[in-house]
Length: 203
Image (cartoon, rainbow, N blue to C red; front, top):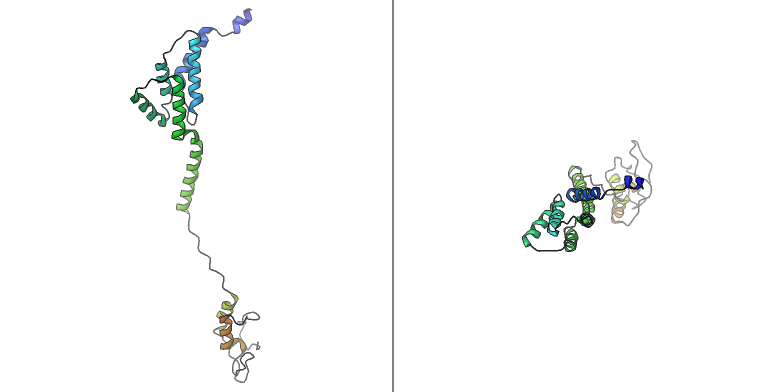
């Protein structure tokens, strides 16, 4: 029996702890308002069970003051006091929960993450350099035409073109052949002409 009395908490200790928590407890950033308000009301009920009566108006003032660290609730407190409306603790609890939803405080963590991501993206766009646009690939006909439009060597005067049967030029230098390639009528065969100096074999 002596051990039970030694380790049991005295009513005066319970009363003191409940009173201290009631007057010291304040909401934290990112904390939901409902558990906070219910915790304060719980301390009030504990005090009542020990015959310590706290008027509801004082409890309401304490609850509103405990929210003063969150700027969004400061305006709520101002509006509440301006209305001079008498409400019960349960009604105040519901009003604060609804205000939390209206102000979007219940998803503050998600919003903070989105804001950080948006800021980082904006910084990247400002500091980043625009890349150079890639030049589109040319088709084989235009490449072949560019390489053969200005030949460095001409055919001997007696050589015959195997494309138009004309004399004095090769097929690779034939204007008709090059024109047909440009028009898409003919597909060039073989690689572009070699750039090596000296006489080349006829195509």
